[in-house]
Amino acid sequence: MQEALGSAHYGSRYKDHWRPREGSIVSLSLPQSNGVTIARVAAGAKYGFVSPVPAQDGYAISFELMNFQKGELWLDGRSHKQEQLWENHSVFYDLRHEVEAYLEDPFDFIQFHIPQSFLDKLAAAHSIPAIKDLTGPIGVGVDDPVISGIGKLLLPALDRPNEVSRLFVDHLSLALCAHVAHKYGGGFSPPEKVRGGLASWQLRRAQELLEANLDGDISISEIARECMLSPGHFARQFKRSTGVNPKRWLLMRRVDIAKDLLRDPRLGLAQIAQACGFADQSHLTRVFTSMTGVTPRVWRHSDRG
Image 1 (tube, rainbow, N blue to C red):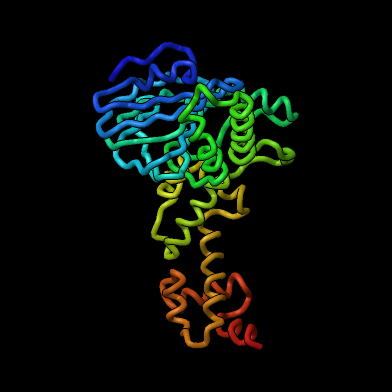
Image 2 (tube, one colour):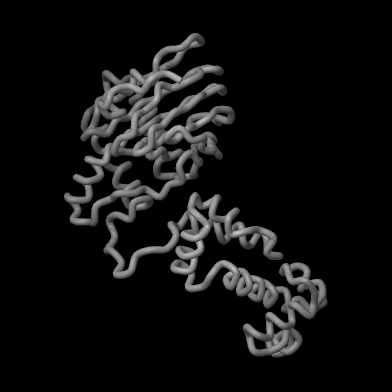
């Protein structure tokens, strides 16, 4: 791979990283606003390697203007998956890792470079705790309508960067960073007395995976991997977020689903047991009774009454 560029931050060396290739590349940048860089980059197929971005304090967010499928991403030399790089989705990159990429499909995106120094100033100006981590999953597209809206507002300005109002760029870059700080950095809300637990996207993903495997045929390691955590750390943070461990949460969810199904008189207990991931009717009865104090049959009749 090509050698990394010097230590200057990514935003100030943007065009050095996105150099023209055979098949053309378009790189259009707006005037830098408060240290935030906004640029549009597009190229045809088989662009190849992007000049590596050295590790630095800051983040890059790409707003995708077309679907992108085929390419590779490395963080600190280790392969990192990319998913859901779809049109109108936003993708986060933590530049505290050295970032390298190889692009095969055509691409077109608006990219925002947000240095940590800007987030520090934003936090200080609003008397909130320092924003040290953004929780957006690295390399995985998220459907964020606010970033999408700001990106679309910037498109006409990027077509004529020499004519754009600096005040317009300042307002939109501040709006973007305020939104990112609030939604992904925990800013602009009173600090909680007790912090910890999974990020909202991690908890949502873990619960989705557990519900998709009601029979328990998924390991903690698999769920932790999806949340980009070690199994032990994931299990501790899941319990901190929900008050119970993943196994107990799954049992509780099975029972909740069983209660909903018991309201349908057409369904037998064996059918309900199977639908909820229990081994059989007897297993359903044991777990249900231990958690509610009554058998499924008694609960069904009492609920109807």
